[in-house]
Amino acid sequence: MSRFNLLEQAWIPVKGRRELIKVCEIVHPDILGVDAPRADFNAALMQFLIGLLQTVFAPETPRAWRIFYSNPPTEAELQTRLDTIKEAFYLDGDGYRFMQDNLAKEVGKCLPIEEMIFGAPGDSGKEGNKDHFTKRNDISGLCFSCSSIGLLAANLFAEDGGQSYYPAMRGNGFISNLVCLDEATSVPSLWKNVWLNVLENSKQKYQEQTVTKNFLWLTDLPDKPQVEKLIKIKTDLNNLKKAKKVTKYKQINAEIDEKIKPLEKEQKSLKEELDDLGEGKIIFPDDKNVLQVYWAWMRRFLLDTENSEKKQCSICHANTRIITKFYKKNKGYKYSKEHWQDSHPFSPTEKYERTHYNSNNEKYKDKMLALNMPTNGLPYNYWQDFLRHTTKNSPAKVVINHLKNKNSDSQLVIFAFGYAMDSNTPLGWYESKTPLYFIDDESNRSQFEAEVEKLISASNKIANAEKGYLVNAIKLAWFNYNDMDEINKKPKDRKRDPFIKDPRKSKLYDQPINISRSFMNSSESKFYLLLKALYSLANEDKLTEESLLQLKKEWYFHLKYLAEVIFEQWAFKSSIQTNPRRISIAHKQLMRNLTSKSLKQDTLGLTKENSND
Image (tube, rainbow, N blue to C red; front, top):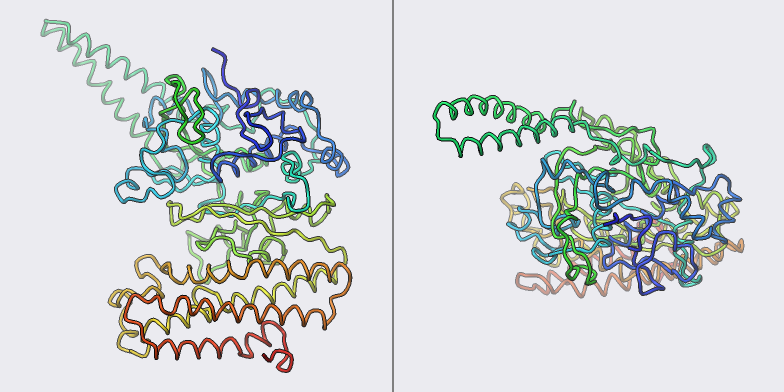
């Protein structure tokens, strides 16, 4: 049977065609986008396709980039390039396999295929009823397409999985940014969306690759000699034990026992050596190999393709060959986040700053690390982090590339996505699309960004989950915080208060986050309308005091109205007896804050005269 190769077979689900397509077919204009059954699968597929083009088809000049953006290569041209690396993309069969390790079968655990899917519960998750994303026993088998994407996602989003199961290159719960066409103003195109995220590579011209260092699964891991010894010892022990069963002579049995003892001792020693987690045993990839950002591999899995059977896939429901099991081994490659997070092209970053540094965090000092996905998703206040370049923040490199070169005349958006994590447990998958606006005049752009920051700061002042006006007002409506005896108690002795931090986990309970999310979601559409209006004014050189005043007043009254509406919705949701007097006092406090100089004048820049109701 011929081997299944990801660069030759049809396995990619897309919009525009009913059937799965080959990688080389993404050049066709009727392919509108990826269309996997899961949102994280779509994100994984996009990064996979971008990585392929960056590896074998990266343009050498801006002109070459623009030519291929509008006129993709032919299917045959792309396939010729892909053929140079196809040995790294076999999913099954003998020899090296895509993002897999053959040694896992010999020294790893055999697990049901559902545990390979990111977010699926392991033993502790099942015991604690934490199977939120993928229910236990919900996935009994996966087709080759879903298995391939699941394998990708397992490495791209890998959580800190415990003893030597290392997290993804960018750690746990990071935000990714891709640049895409705005489908409201442009015809969808998978080729263009992928190509928009391919960076120029003028340093090295394309060369055909037969054996490549970019794909770590094409080389043996350092523990292969020990594993091979272990396999031989296991075989020898089995043969000796079989011989012992069939012989009736005590002398021969005694001789066999004498041979078994040293083999068992050596077997134990080898297992201990394989399980040794000392610093010298950790494998760090070469940090000079820049393409590792696309092909990071830290999960030593092996799909049990040999025992596949024809059934229905549990995710896409196709009736085809199904994989039901896989093997899993720890101690794969470990990526140093202090290096790789800043070099990753899809990561918006922020400067790591702490009031105190010790041996654990000194290596991150002044490093730019990937933005983490917040538990309340991706509200519009992330616009600044995705687009503005400061001493403390930097957009993703694919975004910087477009801000610098303005490669496309089409309206573009930043597609942001990722998992919010609590340690190694996924809390939610979030996505957002933020307009990517280009303003040629530097002065107008600076003023545009400053005014947008005022709009965002005003909504943050109201909706912040810890100190926002709205959360504080609802807290006052629900609880009697004049009871100083209760406030002065140690956190562990206080009554459960959904507005204080959990003393065991040092994080807010869900209620403030839900209140903040409700406000941000309700004001999002208005924000993007005003953002578009601001952009039009900046582009036309009309950012006058009068035009800005009208927009800021419109925003202020919208926020004020929403804050009152959401307060009324939440104030009466207390799980304790409702207290009208307390709610009235809380409402007055909210109104004082909403009409305060701090919000209207200091934050939004409205004067006392022009901000009156």
